[in-house]
Length: 320
Image (cartoon, rainbow, N blue to C red; front, side):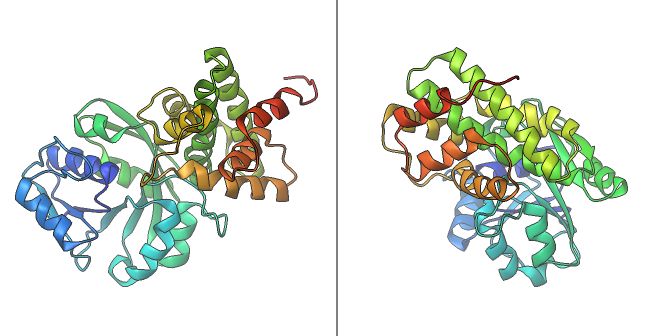
């Protein structure tokens, strides 16, 4: 009997499925198409999205959505999450649904767990977030993440079910804080990439990370989150990783902008959509988020890199 279903056979969903199956769980990795599922079954790896990592025997690739386990990991990009859930609401009803994505829905300003609650009202929403690259998890390297659920009992149940030998989960009930940390750190990562790509140096990048973190905390506080959550894995921890490694799609996107290069195509860059959504939400709340506003303008080609740098450096002097 399948213990855990992982919906979304991208790199991250595949890595989680490998880690869980390696630890002895019976895992179904559910692809969008039968051809992708067949290819993974034949080769016992996900050559299209995470090549080089063999599937454990307990991992079963499939394209069937009809027999979801009680615990479902939803590794679908945030901007596609509502459509996915609406299409499969009947199959997912009554399950524990763990969002494994980061961001804010640009059309509504909702985070992943709110999207889950609206689309599948009788499900138990949760979110898994923190500093992690798919290749590290798949390789069995030590990784620590935060698991947030609505109640302490739900959080502990999922923590025990999803922790593995290399995947250590910490639990919390501050869903909003975890969502905001995972979403906004991608915006800061784009800005950090721009700083390095434009040749501003590592000192400038450190300033971007620090001031970006201040914006994250302000936004989280305005949304009712516990600001201490932003000091944890799903906030500060993820921020450090994403702003310092070219494995990060958001950081690499910023590098391309800073260098004046074509931006990578066919790659999900959650920070691009999230910057626009968060800028609009912050302005509605009368919050000062200059870094987020600047990234949103760069994404929309409303500012050049030189203009963006000039605007940020000409802001009024103030206390830290």
